[in-house]
Image 1 (tube, rainbow, N blue to C red):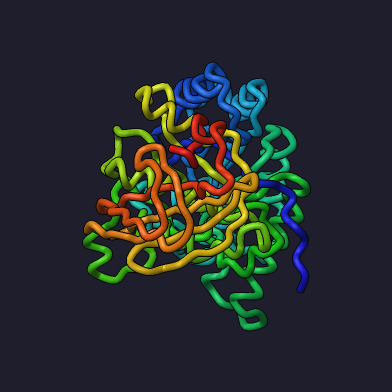
Image 2 (image 1 turned 60 degrees about the horizontal axis):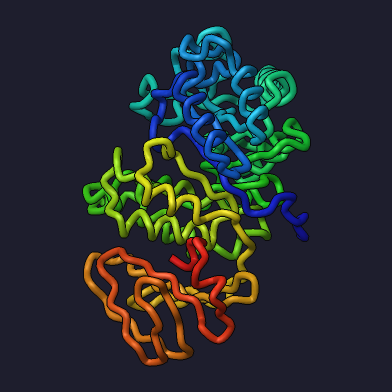
Length: 396
């Protein structure tokens, strides 16, 4: 099957989740929005995540933390020149939700456990016409009345948890995604928690790995070999390993990067590695940082990612160090990334490269990387003083 080409190009943005989680309110959102607008940061999408609704499933009942409602928030985002995005989990509901209590015939069974909500949550029967009518109403309100430009749709896998006699789980998932695409019309869709094949050609962006964490790895869950754990190193590995989907099946969502030095336990090297890998391979490049709290150095690093330019990936090699060759504006770059917890030395096997911190590195030169450190080098054959003096991240 030939897939339609993605409608969008690589873009940047902000999402509330990985800093505030469900603890958002109108003031927090507007303060962060103003931080971008007042500094003329050229992001494309500003997205509200979980925490605005009264209960998961009751999407049209906005809680008291947003007294002027979500239509007002979308309007304020647009005034700043950004596209507005909002989070939904269309196929699930909390047990305390109105739709669970008022329409028990819509509910199939318990779908999972989330301590951030009221613990257990249920999956809705996608083939129940009442459920479909409800979702049509929700999406019409969010996209046409509230006028959001993008929906981030989460926990999508839940719709296919329970098999039917007449359909496989794969069929259920695909039909559900076709329904989502239909009711979203020409609005942007970011799919999360969905089997990737079922999202091909049906989402504009799609999460292709785990959530990042505020630490590098969850050592306990890793020791238990729990595959679905929240893990920064797992997210990075998926971003690299599933790079071939980007720009073909959809634009890849590698999850957010973090630059801030507060409210997380990632080291400076870990934060930079996450940022660099997301920029190289990601189709949508988001952060959740409150940029008004950045230090001068952090703000300089953040601004250096703009403008985001198209990259041609030449080669990716996995050895002791991940080696990534790519091209931007006819300049060839080499990234060396150490994803391990020990120092590793790597040889420059061909060509001469430059980095502002390391200087000129000749062929057969050796670079030693600290644990979790990444370095970006530019090939000197075509380099000019304009690039050496630039503030672009790929010259830092």
